[in-house]
Length: 417
Image 1 (cartoon, rainbow, N blue to C red):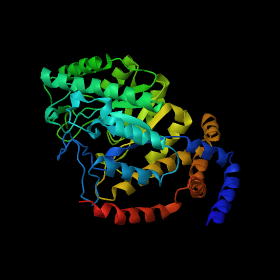
Image 2 (cartoon, rainbow, N blue to C red):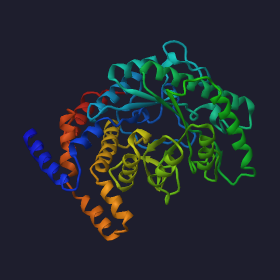
Image 3 (tube, one colour):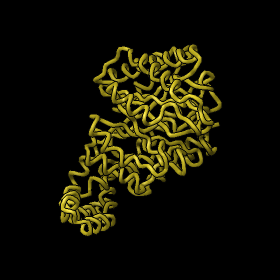
Image 4 (tube, rainbow, N blue to C red):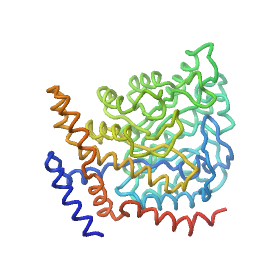
């Protein structure tokens, strides 16, 4: 099998060489592009606080057996997924995944010590960690959080944001790498609001207070994430794209783009280049919306390819890539592997595309030739290069990785209550 993979790779290498592509260089580039794998796929966004229900427009559908029910199980599942994904990556945590050795603390009292086990987990595996305050699935998030009319509620969530910023700062220091902390809130109204400005003014003031916290701006990258609407918030979202785009620009922080958080006719792939003209970096949550922000598993589809193309053209070091979906209809570990590998396939596809030649054709307005080459490239032997990349990174080739999932389900997941 190995000899066959090598032979096919050498053939592919020659084919790509004809259009000016160095496949070895593409593989070397892909190897060092990290993707932040979201922990919440493993337990349906439940966390470790003891909550049995989700709120804030969050919903995980399905009841596939084997859901992680505690930190050890979730970490084991993450390990299994990462063993089947080539390259070196990061993990993305929500604050609700705090691990309490002693007394449980509410979210406005969280400390770095509640994430010590995650930090040790990452250190041993040479992983980076990204972080998110959790503004949903809590008694104090029923109506609103950072934009609440109730000062006591608003203060609680401001304190939570400050705690999380300090935790992100600690994580970055301990792991000696950056930590992206992303703020998303589920605030808004089901029906047409009487006053759109006041909730946004309160949100702005709350964010200002959170960002007044002392933190290392070199190591901690703060991002704000918008949404067009959510369940129960169909008519008005306080943290809209326009609000966060302006807030991020004014405060020199990042605007995070989730490709499920826009109208169906909008594409994040079209937004990346514009963002990078005015910001040094942009953060992404890559998902697959079906009719709305339904957080389906990432596929190797056209929009993912276009997103990857923009990442490569504009510089992979300028785009922080994270995945965000949760599907309980299928094996949860397999869902991670499928999404992560598909994101990498899209990046490889982009790395194997002769962008310079295509751009020259565009600049010369040779649109017929441009379209011809764009279409012919789609059937170039990407799969042979991908197989070689997997083989040389010691992960299963093609669908062989699923054999490991079947074994893990039998030996581990099926034994969970």
